Image (tube, rainbow, N blue to C red; front, side, top):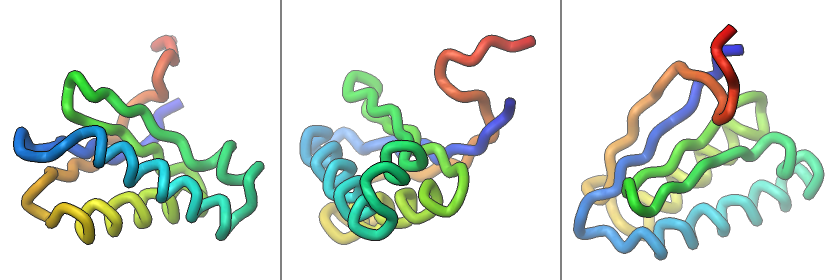
Length: 98
């Protein structure tokens, strides 16, 4: 199953630990908006500090809201020049091509 995601590529000057804090805050805010269970099921991301990137999967309303919150918090805290945002159509992590 193909699924769209957004890849956040963090600049060398950006502290990736602080970027991850923004993701955690976005997850908390998503839980407030949609409830804990819906956020656990719909707010999916993969953070790779060594690659200086994060993937946010955007399935459904919860995933789209989570992505909006992540993008907004990163812009607010670090500025638009601190990361690059790329929309990708791809497979979920661990999914085997059939």
